[in-house]
Amino acid sequence: MTDIALAAEFPSASREAWMARVATVLMGASFTEKLVSTIDDGIVVEPIYEQRSGPRAERAAASPWLLFQRVDHPEAEAANAQALDDL
Image (cartoon, rainbow, N blue to C red; front, side, top):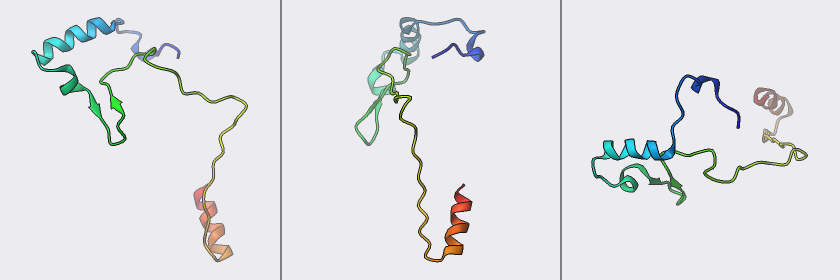
């Protein structure tokens, strides 16, 4: 990932510095209980992620995206209108 020009004016911060600042805001409360959540799928959502937090989800350049839209109207004219609307 490249540097974001919008963030160029801000100094970079380490995770340790961020955690120290969060600890002062939480005033002894549990980091996990206050800032970490689990969504319906059981996936844990952290309050902040670093670029190196995990593997990148990428696809091979040779496998293009395939997009489909269902057109299921029984009348040809209406199906055509539906398909054109989806474009």
